[in-house]
Length: 123
Image 1 (cartoon, rainbow, N blue to C red):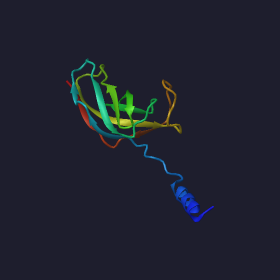
Image 2: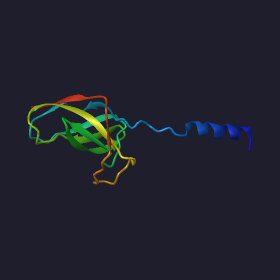
Image 3: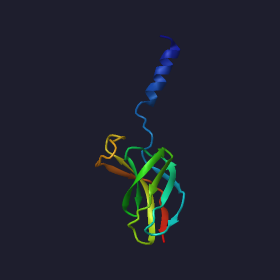
Image 4: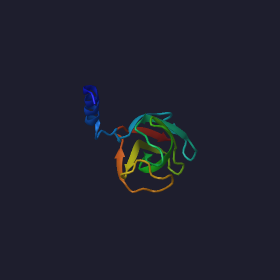
């Protein structure tokens, strides 16, 4: 083993225990308003989004499933059952010790909310 090999191993050891951020980041919505009772698909952009039900949208207190596109983009449907009004939108990651729970399986866990909140208006 050479000195360079030892140096490489020590650099790897310094990275041990590092995990990427699990806090979702909400940057923007493709639209900010839609008519009450009508389907509206909204593209949400940001960061730290995960597939398989780990990330969802909190739409005025209503948990809304997303369609995962990438760690930086997803879509969701505005709930048609909500009346006209102004609603807060934020991303939520549920951490339960397993970043990728099986699809369609409800997981109890710790909600981790985005710091950013965007207002959406249903007319």
